[in-house]
Amino acid sequence: MPAQVAQGANPEKGRAYLRDKLGRVVRGGMPAFQVDSRARRTLAAISAGYARKFGKPDPEPAIHRTLMEGIESALGLVALGLADDNANWSYTADGRRYRRYGLASADGRAAPHRLRNPNYPVQ
Image 1 (spheres, rainbow, N blue to C red):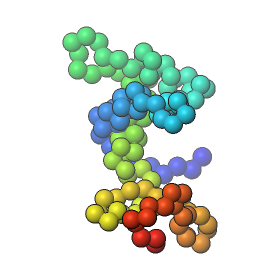
Image 2 (image 1 turned 135 degrees about the horizontal axis):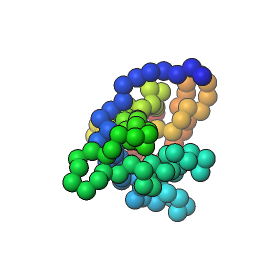
Image 3 (image 1 turned 90 degrees about the horizontal axis):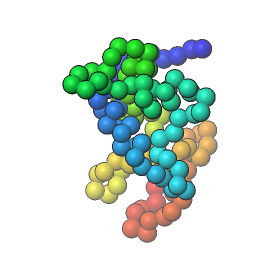
Image 4 (image 1 turned 45 degrees about the horizontal axis):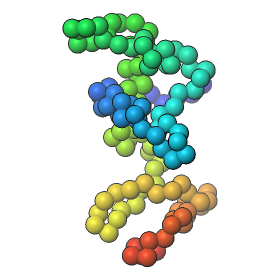
């Protein structure tokens, strides 16, 4: 399977992102972070395998630590907004960046907004 190798972010960033998402529920009552039921090692690591012993700053070296540090590193990129090179960004009138909906067609034209803001000019 071909893969692109890149350096991840600091695992602390991803850990904070994961902690935040584990405590959230999004539209429809779905959890903001989900793990496939077939990802048994990931589920085991999140549920109990990746933990610090009392009084120790780091978890014990083991498969769960290796797995979770990789996941946290990747989630750190997501938290920083660096994970998607093909993101479709736009800017508000006051300069704040936001992610737009995906492309409508292969020719690169952006999809129309689902909800039109009457105070925002159509692009």
